[in-house]
Image 1: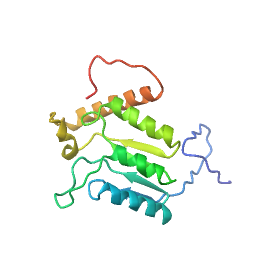
Image 2: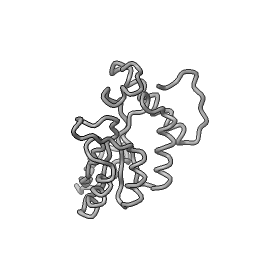
Image 3: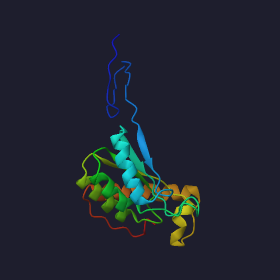
Image 4: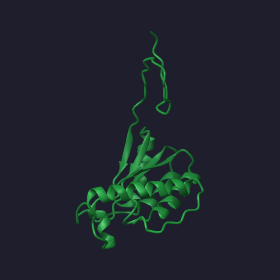
Length: 171
């Protein structure tokens, strides 16, 4: 029996055994909460020159400690980083408390339009050290996951060009 490879996006419904072969990507992590944005910009350019395949940026409001004293605004930094590199760069983001889903839809669509097939985002439920700045109550995990699901739906629908109106906020 021969071995065939298929992309991760293909689905097979027959009874054949398929082996999915994928290459590991090596990425550089841009720790906004630890390093000044200007230094991270230089670092991500050096990472690409050194042969890294991609990069990922955290999105922290607070630095890990007072000694670090940094936490650049990821969405601004991404535009500069993508403009000065050629590899894919993504970010982590928690829509719903600190960011309204419509704002994330606009920001990610802008980056996607400017840098086609290079920007990606990983959406999550957030962490208190970064989301508390809104002074809103920190929700239990189940409620944050529900809010995340609603936010993802809103972002996807806006990316598809749909006009939406909600009777209750997604935050």
